[in-house]
Image 1 (cartoon, rainbow, N blue to C red):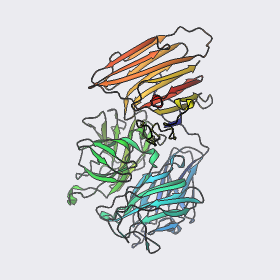
Image 2 (cartoon, rainbow, N blue to C red; image 1 turned 180 degrees about the vertical axis):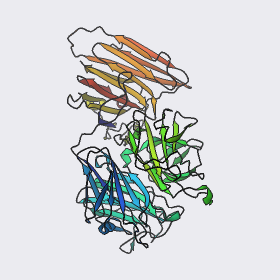
Image 3 (cartoon, rainbow, N blue to C red; image 1 turned 120 degrees about the horizontal axis):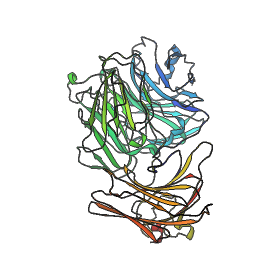
Length: 615
């Protein structure tokens, strides 16, 4: 499968670094929602929820359909009038309870739910509309009590929605208009903008995980539970399946001696999962899930063969011993490593040394991103990985929003006042490959190379190659790239025609340290190999001594890689096959599965020969 992305940098070492997609929009828009809660007691302080925005020169515009009064308080906007009660759904219903938040500037938005008394309960990092999708699998948690919930918010009028509820839901435990919902078959709904379909189990501890949601326009999906232990409400927004990943790191909430729980759900059959200190296991079906306990301080890496979604549930009484549990249950999305960010991030919570608050970061370096005068900082390496967990416990009262420095690739969540767990920031730009490349067999009827066609059995001459043209945007600086899945495709023959600078990178998708990059111009070919712990003789430069001005001619290349036992050999042929460079990599397996092509100056034409089409 091929994906075209807009990128401002790519893996190009030492000249370029792997970076992210840039999306240009005139307006940043979020469609958000709240979940239902127990209204048996009145709201004591009149606060039904609140929004917390970052990085704006003025407050964003907030639109709802119930005439709620939104009261500004610094960078917080509170839902504070009696009409705001109608933003909180009650049971299984479709109603105009959505909230649209927009600004002409880019900004980060956190949404917080309050409990039945109007106090902070839980919150989530909102996902901008441009990164929403049309396909979701849902993961919920109410194993220790409470009612599992799902909310689907419309972003566009006349959106058709289909939901397949999993067959494990007991009959009568989820009803719509008094009728038990159908499991195993699609149930259809219509949504307009700012309408929300709210789904809730009638009975306690009915898990809605595995619910499959599709639509013809992008939608926002939220999960959670109400009336959990200690009257807790949990809420989280989840990304669509094309934003899921295969490598994640779980950092437990160190305030809770009982440890945390995680919920893992798949989007593809036969997904094998490796968790640090667990034996590998395979989840057989799409939409199936597992629930696991991660003990206190047992921070863990998770690597899957296909994309997964992971949510973390903290401050729960796993061992029936409330003395080792601090705070109320809360849920937070665990972002995969491609969603980590090196941007400056801010915490919404005014922290205090005695109120069960903590900021937890996971990074691929041991650099401290916080002010040591304000925090007791503990850095813990995760054995068996290159990652560090950085725990930041306030040692003084903090009455301002805390900002961490940028430039460090990491993920950070805040656990605030023993109540809310919120992911502070994420890079939503990355998309996974929705197709997985397989070896072709005559007559198998499978799209083996993920090009959207079942064409391996009757291919034409044009099917034998992939052609791609890349020219950077001179105004915005955007770089256009194409990604090709190359699992098991060695050797690969390709050509580049350019008078600028082009890069072709081969990498191991689940380990950004394992990559091979060729920088190509009409004057030179520069090769650089990167691997864990460094690669001996990992670079090579060839000056072609070309004449000036440039005459764009096609340059032919071939790369081969092979693995013997634990060693890798990479051979790169250039100058139309007359020159070659061989890299020996002892003790490291470099089985490349991704090829990325882009021009960084001027323009470039790329042609890739597809070897499996010639079988």
